[in-house]
Amino acid sequence: MSFKPNQAVPPDRRDPALQTGMFAVLAALLVHAQGAVVREGNMPRAAGLGVGGMPLIEGRELLRTLGRMQVGEATALGFEADAELAPILREAGNVQNVLRRLRGTRLGAGLAPFDATMLELVAMLYDGLFEDPRLSASLKGLVGRLQVAVFKAALADKTLFDGGPHPVRRLVDAIGQLGMRLPRDLSASSALFPVLASTIDELARGNFHDDLEAFDSARVRVEALVASEDARVAAQLRAAEAELEYVETMAASASAREDEGAWPLPPGLGTGSWIAIEERDSRYERHARLHYVTPMKTRFLFVDRRGNKVFEGSRSMLARAFRSGEARLLDSEPDPSLFDRALKRIVAKLRDRPAPEAPMRRRLDHLGSRGRVP
Image 1 (cartoon, rainbow, N blue to C red):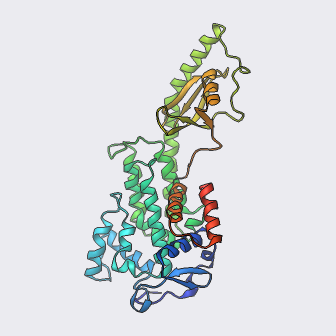
Image 2 (image 1 turned 180 degrees about the horizontal axis):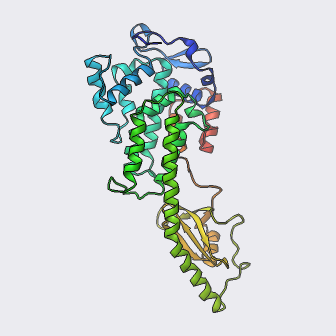
Image 3 (image 1 turned 90 degrees about the vertical axis):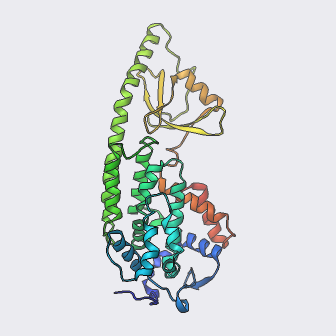
């Protein structure tokens, strides 16, 4: 069905699942903060911004237009609309939130209520991604190229904010995992960069449909890069492992083996465990994974995802660090999900706005305390 300007979106096209779940909570908080709330069923929505309260354009029609502009094709919206949208699209890879700028255009302001809410939430998601200190500037630029594609995917599969294996969420997390393994100064001169960039660009300019298989295909390629980096780090650390074994052998030959009972370690600490280590003269702490323990369990090596040493020492040194509070054992890898870290930033920003209805406030507090979509 083609969409014409000022044609309202039929109410029965709204997904009933959107009336529950985290999306409904975020949408309610958003419209509560923005005002102009109109009730439609059980889900609050913003009033239409088009002529006579009708939307100027449907979200998918706007996205089809942006897709044609991305590949240099003419659109049906006219020169004035194209001239307004083209400069915005060009900024997608420059760590600029083009979705927020799109929201401020004449067409963006005239989206149907649900589409406008989704656009605002995806824009806030990108605010969170761009603010993430653990993602390098180069990767933020690559992720930024996907802004229009992510908005389109969010409209195609509306469970983006409700948890579960959404293709966008899984791809974003795979990119985040890769980012924790790559140098902070990653640039186009890196051998890995062109491979990742081509994967992102292919998806950004692709004409994917509601099945979103293109996001899953891109994720598989990114996960292959993650596995490759893990293998490189493991090879890089073999020399450090051999050195630790040599130190242990020399200590044992001098009858200096440490007594495990004299230096107990936290229960559950084993290869793969994560710890937090206080930075001296700093309010920050570093996170490290136990990579290697020598055969006699007297020497320990902790590294970050890039293979950099964070802590290397004897059992007594490690035990003292735990006893003094300089180190503590974590239940799991700290904030492994790039998507969830961005979502926590959305929650934090919305919580600072006027308090919504009590049931939704309680649910938001639950999310904020756990840092994960229920």
